[in-house]
Image (cartoon, rainbow, N blue to C red; front, side, top):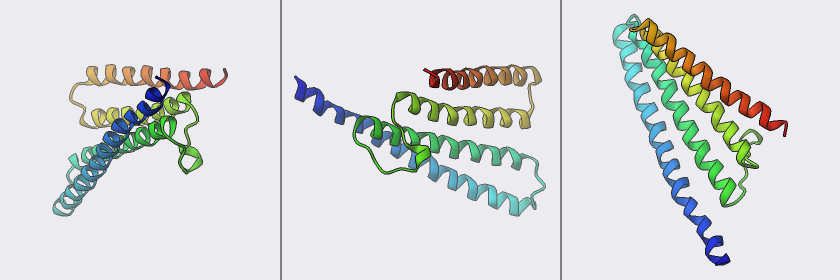
Length: 150
């Protein structure tokens, strides 16, 4: 039974490879969107205000790609084997993993809120969305701060 559980850790490869493929796809999508925005900038001479929204969307795509990459690398490092990474990306335990992903999640939420703010269709909805982003962000920050003191 012990050997079974030792070998079953390689099931994590499914998550690692899937997240890595999703990350590569998201990076590719970000490059394609960047190309379209670049063409739009040239055609409109940068005077179309919607370009700002598209630029924010590009940031969001790349942040999601980074989060997926961090998930892939972190999962591999936690469950399979240590790999040589920059110090800021080294994951020693599940708490480190959650804090790093939480930081990227906060960035994604803030960029998404910025997109809503730039579009500004529903002021009350945008206000409530901002409050929700602030509450979730505060929760993730508190989790990382108080848990690190244990």
